Image (cartoon, rainbow, N blue to C red):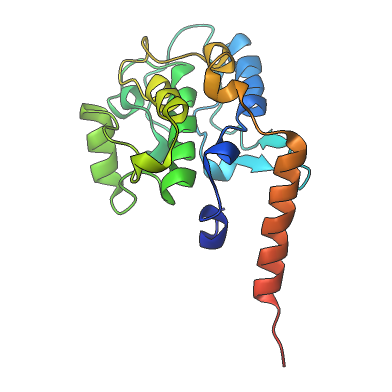
Length: 196
């Protein structure tokens, strides 16, 4: 599901900081040696009460036996090691989640017009200059992205490390997120009303 334009335009740094609950989901998966491998905006849901839910575990794998080498998932959210068909494990989920945050921040994932350009760029140089309007975002958000978008998966932050990041620690309250979601649903409903 694509995020509607009027919804994306009201997203700010404070709203994006509501990643703590996502991080708890990832810690659970990664502690159990599971990699989702298809994290993207369409697979991260938020209920009208502000609860985060991960869906679509069709590509999820047990990485306890060792890293995988196959290329699966959605190109715009694919980590460099997966694009290069190099061994990969749970860090691919961290990269993909950062790309999902970029999609909210920039209104589209990087290189949205060409999946080939996206995969080539991610596979060779990563995601340099990820934000379209860097001045709009806090230094802590930029650092959070930098921790997640390391080309070398060994240098990428883990979900457990991200739980302690200052950006996550300033998480918006679930009640605030529920209020935002209700506003968005109201805006959507009102925009769809046809007056005859």
